[in-house]
Image 1 (cartoon, rainbow, N blue to C red):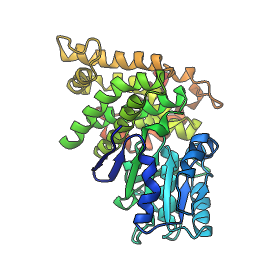
Image 2: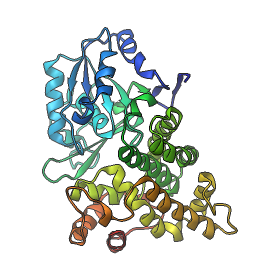
Image 3: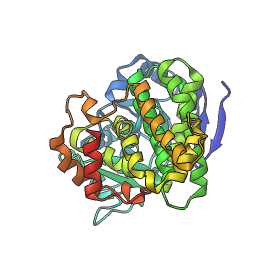
Image 4: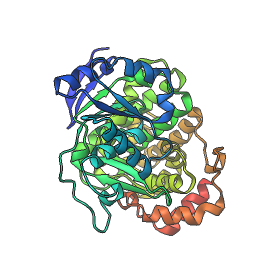
Length: 389
């Protein structure tokens, strides 16, 4: 596969083998002591060991104290590791959690206080006014697209409430997007992260905010994911399908600077209350929220049906085409092994009707639904969660 180089706005090296350029790039920029930030699950896999072994010429130290949804204490531990290694740069390797912590470690290695004091909605939000260490991102999942994002989502250890640190200063200086690094992902993780990427593109397009550039990116991201996701789950070694999903993931992350919607507010609530994997939560909730959105987003949902080439997407009316897109989402979930409802989730922390009050409280406080195509009240969230049970 040919390597492609482009910037939008992050400089990206994309294609099979892109990982082999990480060390030469760091050395060329004058950095030789990177802190590698990753999660403990990935750190235990052979693919990570191979990747680190290919970083010849640099003195790298690995920090792998990340698991689950990223929290403040993980950032603090990463900063301690950065300083102990006398690191001059940060290399984030992994999915959204690892990359979000990597950005936060870079930020807090040069700034005082508490990471959550840099969240955009903090009442006395601190300024990001010092230059951050050189940061490069290496995604190993195709979901959040955090490698091209200018935000980091970190939770409080006690409340588990997610906070967003947002600044162009958090953008990676270089992204090495190598689809071969995603081949070892098992089907359930491929499915969950893939649904995350699809949800980003869908919700960005449906947002009523004005941003035609993002609309075009989101539509193309949906087209790519609709074709590639089932293949990537079914044929894990298919490098082209993996590459397509990696691209759709980055496109979704670029597009959602336009904003997201109520699916993400539901997913953030589920992660807070039940520690549900973010992509899986999006996957479970997306068709339920789209049915709620239907009256206010008929034309756009019909366009999504056309772009995704779903059965019925060429129907006679916008209403029939829009309905066919939602039906397709439901069938796609089933084909990927994503539970149809929350009651079908068999994780360690089951979600039940007893959780609805807390879920509604967290969802309504979340900002994502403010750009949902249909206004979503607390009572609406209550109905959506109840129907998704």
